[in-house]
Amino acid sequence: MSILALTLFSSAATAQQTVVGERYVPTIWVDPDGCEHWVMDDGAEGYMTPHTNRDGIPVCRRGNTCAVMNSDQLFATDSYQISAAGRARLEEFFRQAGAVAYIINGHTDSRASDEYNMRLSENRANAVARVAQSVGARISAIRGYGERQPIATNSTAAGMQKNRRVEIVCIR
Image (cartoon, rainbow, N blue to C red; front, side, top):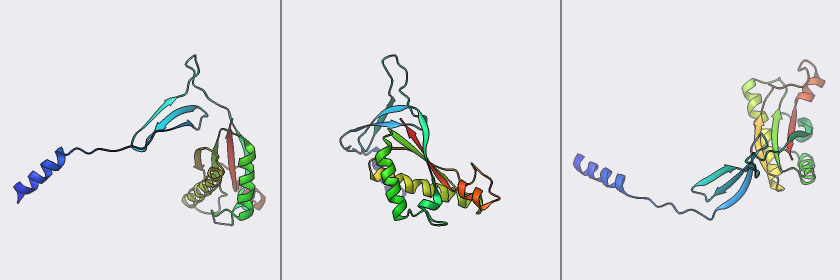
């Protein structure tokens, strides 16, 4: 039996496999620093190269925070399901903003554990990104920071409310 198994293993190891790719899909990917990359992908294999100008300098765009939305206006407590009103507000924002790409950053206050807040902030950033993509916006990066980047004190209700936010960086 061991000889038979060896033979089967040996013939399987020498068998060739052909992977059929799809048509190449060209696109431009904007990295979190705002630099453009030309991308070709056929589903089985992809290629990427930095987009440079005629002098060989990478084409990079400026990114700036173009929106800060309080999470309380978009989500229920301890949830990452966007309310209907929040969805409509986000859709309108992404239709009007006119950026080449966006970076979505989620933040929380410090009431729960660090691990929980990291997961919640990332899930909320992903939910906002899905809305953006549904209206044709290109998302460059999605980040969850939890409670690690507060903009106000977490010792007051008003401070915690300011810390529960989603920041949208526009790359133009």
